[in-house]
Length: 78
Image (cartoon, rainbow, N blue to C red; front, side, top):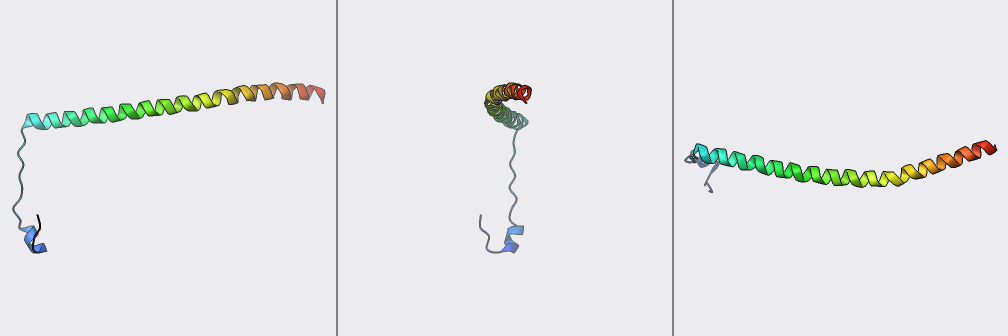
C-alpha cells in the first residue's frame, strides 16, 4: 500500500489477522518438522563429508607406517 506522505502512513488502519489456536499449533508443528528435515539433511551431509575425510586419511596412515619402517631400517645402517 502506498501512502501519499510519511504522515499518512502513521495513521493508516491497522491490519488484524485472526487465526484459530488449532491452525497456529499446526503451523508451529509444520515449522518444527521442516527444521528437523533440514537438520537431518545437514547431519547426513556432514556424515558423508566425515566419511570422505576418514577415507583420505587411511592411505596416509599406511604410508606413514611404511616410512617409519624404512626409517627404522636406515637407522640400523647408520
